[in-house]
Amino acid sequence: MTAIPVQPPPIAIPAPPRTTLFLLAPGLLLLFAIFALPLFGLVLESLKQYVPGRVGSAVDAPLTLENYRELATPSFAGVLYETFKLSAAASLAGLLAAFPLAYCIVRRFSPRQRAVCIGLLVMLVLLSMLVRTYALELAFGSVGVARPLFLALGISPTSRWYTETLVAAGLLHAVVPMCTLTLLGTIQNIDPRFCDAAQSLGAPAWKAHLGITVPLALPGLVSAFLIAMTFSISAFVIPMVLGKGRVLFLSNTIYTRFSDVANYPSGAAVSIVMLVISLLVLSLVSLVQRRRGSRS
Amino acid sequence: MTGTAKRLGDRLLGGAMIAMLGLVLAFLVTPLLVTCLLAFDARSFLGPLPPPALSMRWFEKLVSLDYVTTGLATSLKIAVLTTSVDVFIGTAAAVALDRSNFPGRSLVMAVFLSPLIVPAVVIGFALLLFLSRIGIVDGFTRLLCGHIVITLPYVVRTVLASLSGRDRRLTEAALVLGATEHQAFWNITLPLIRSGMVTGAVFAFAVSLDDVAVSMFLTDPSTYTLPVALVSNMRASFDLTIAAAAVLLMAVSAVLIIVLERFVGFDRLLGQGLFRS
Image (tube, rainbow over all chains, first blue to last red; front, side):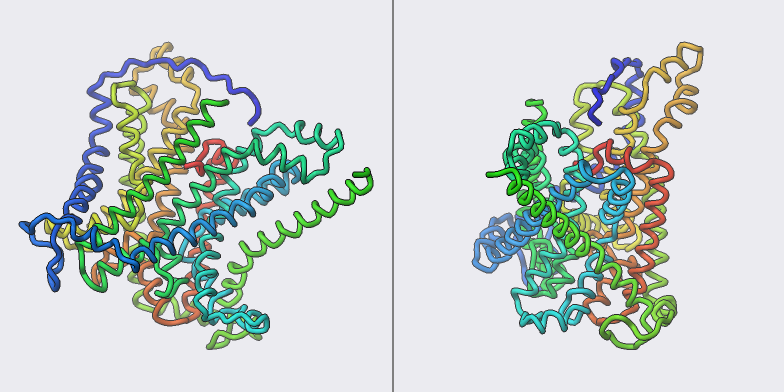
């Protein structure tokens, strides 16, 4: 990883543009038909007037901003706040757990331990969201195995606070392996001799890490945090199952607008809001990564 | 600060760190172990651990349930079809993006990766609206469309990564030695990017098999995928058949991971920056 990559200069094999076009065409046509057009239709739908009792808007329905104006209510703000609060909490906690873990894997573990740990983390990243959610419900849910333990500690597993924590724990379970794998590369790129030098000059370990390792890893930490945020904000199964309808994320609101009230224009407006939020967070990610790229 | 105090502090910090890592790993692994254990529980109710006796009753009940077998069949059909379409279209696109430097190349690349940045729920809802407007209401077609959109970027990305990581001089050598472009591609380039294609296919298959957010919108009453059926039942009742299903799904992930490790190796996987988004 630390070796300087010797890249052979790219040899331009002149390709007839017709072949390129021929190879690109199926994918581009497909994405245009079942990705770009539907998204465009979604924008259009979000501007259509909602007629109660009707599934979907009429083709010639008048255009209106009513669906967006309707979102400027305390209840929708509550959903937005809940989504962000729990996502940020899970992402921060995920970083706090992932950073020392990644550090130990890179710098402390033997090659064998490292292989086992990385294998486990890859497994946890690939683990089905459904299995993850169900396993957490079974272990820590309101009727789960840990129920007697929580009751003994005086925690009510049916309180709203507990449900929120459970949703955050679900996100955390997905975020920790994701962040750890992202941070492995970051930590590998930090020269361990800086820290050794500080410690041999008399700094205690915590001071050396806080003053050297953490600042050097900061861009990596920021992008890991933002990646965790984008994942958490658009999570769907975790809040739906662990939140039991009491904790609603933006994604769950879209689904209820579709399945429970069949208000498609409003669902479309929520979708557009969610899309814009995800794009904003992701553009922050690429901003951080570009700045890191230009500095090194 | 004296030397001994410093050393003591470092040792305490090290101990606290190990304890914390232990807790984190326990948090990650315990729920999965509990699920595996309870899936073999012989009791008919959810009781405290450990189960007094083990049995296969939940697995027997699982395979006898209609919604599970129907859902699993649909899921597998969709996942296999999706993965095949992805590997063809995605590899073709990646090869095209790699071999020529036409204007707008980075834009086209961004287009191919863009489904990754749109939340799955939004894709599902948009597709539902669009497909019902143009008159496609068949669940299978709708699910197939949705799954192709969300999985195609994985194949494009991994194949592109392995294309740019390969030694281009090998292809050039083949051309110099008299191979036609076709021969050079089929005999040199394609074997070199096989690991990228396998990684992409495994990811596409895993994502397709696990998706709920897109599929929830696109199912119809008779065509649904296993995860959608399981989620609906998870909300309705608390039954350990789902633990048995979870164990089976974990086994599928394990198989996929072994495939990845065999064909690619985890080091390569990380080196390609797969999880850096």
